[in-house]
Image 1: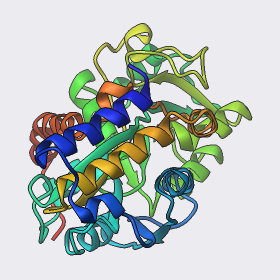
Image 2: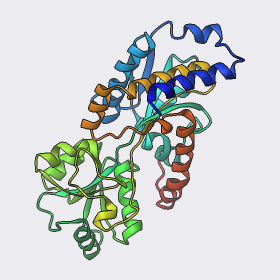
Image 3: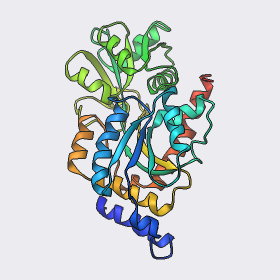
Image 4: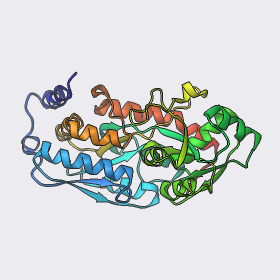
Length: 328
């Protein structure tokens, strides 16, 4: 189904839910600028995606969508900002797998991640890449697994911090292979990747958007992508299934949410603007350059995001809690 048709259906659903006509507030929404809260600093993958989308949504909605970087505590401060905002459609938040799946398992939070938000749409998925320093002795994923097993607690894996996606990816790798890594936490993925390029650590499970430039420059090795299909940006890199570790699927997906209680008709307008934006060839080109895969239209609905979110919690929370990761 064409994305514009999906957007029209979302608005039609809102009309049906309100007895055949949109309330006066929804008919005129938006009448002022909308704030998109990004829970991380400017320049990172989430901020970049948010700014690309905000620019195009502004055109779709006829009002400016501004980006507000509300940072701290691994993204929980920004997510809290959205949870506490007025449910009128003028504050929305972008988040991802770590903020909406991992953080609720390791932090004591003041909000319920499933109940205190209205899902709007999933916008992108970004699998991890299994990468290593340029002079790492293995030449493929099977060789890397053999090396890690032969050197338990000695093979160093850089992470963006305790509980970060790169950490959880490493834990999942340990569970699937029986290898034992020595995790080196950094204050963000950037410093970890810098040390990987410098040969100070052995490997990482890194977001594709972060590693692609270093791979293309020949500064690090890449063994596999943690997805069912190869990345368009790296067509020669095998999937984990092809490389010999089937099922090691890890994807840092992004979505947009509004505060709980946002009127359905207003939320439908926001979702329609997101869907229209994701159909724009320029947006799609910019996402692809970052290694981001835009989900098909059927997965760009609030219902799909809600179901996917709940399924990811069911999948990952047991692993996270079994690892004993908890941050007060």
